[in-house]
Length: 318
Image 1 (tube, helix red, strand yellow):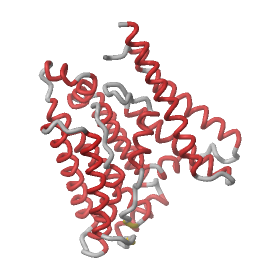
Image 2 (cartoon, one colour):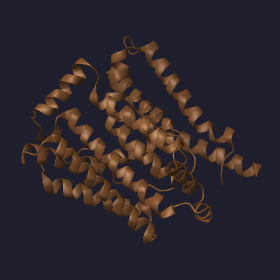
Image 3 (tube, rainbow, N blue to C red):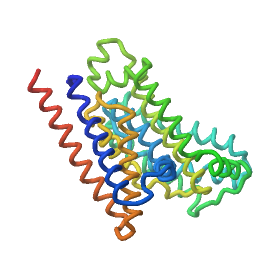
Image 4 (cartoon, rainbow, N blue to C red):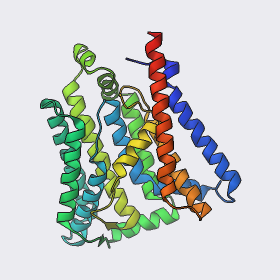
């Protein structure tokens, strides 16, 4: 059931309000919080989470779920580091290989979900175990990446603009265009709203469902690449539990878990809220990092309840 315009805007409005209140309160409480370096760090430090959350947004908009994105980050980072550090492959060629592998991985999960009518939860859970296992088969140790290309990226980030933040913002702009100004985006919303109705309208449901999982894994692989830029290393354990953070960011950003309603821009706000909470804890200096989980858990519960309220009101009006 589709929500009315005023109703479907409530979650993202609430998300934006929470973000503004958190940011204003932190700026008043901590000297130096309201500064360009802190703002840049919000994007830079959460770039790989943001990229994974962008892909997750399309999956949830279509009515599905993807539990494999965190494991894909670990697999991509360790595979990339192995290709560069041990096989001597140029970083650009290695990046192309891991991105293609990530896209193929996601497309395979999408095919299994659609053509065999298998639950997305179970297929992507299997994908999570498979990707994480493959990552540890590649290497149990962290592999440091030493290459002039990575040195140039670090130098550019220091002198001009952080590359991780730049890639996140470019992906965000592309995702917003894809979601709201293309046939694929409209098909994703239609499939999430009602798959049977989308079939009756003649929309390419099979192609759309496969494409959203391909896109999600591609974004997760890109997040793995960004992770290597951020740490100059590959780690099979990277991205552990990040799939849950990505889902939380998407839901806090106003995308309904039932599918069909949400905004990519809302996911950005959800990621920034996550980053602000982490930054507040760092500025405070006396709190455990586990308070981030506690705060995100509380916000997630609140937004799920808000979504339920919005849906209930929409049903009563029809």
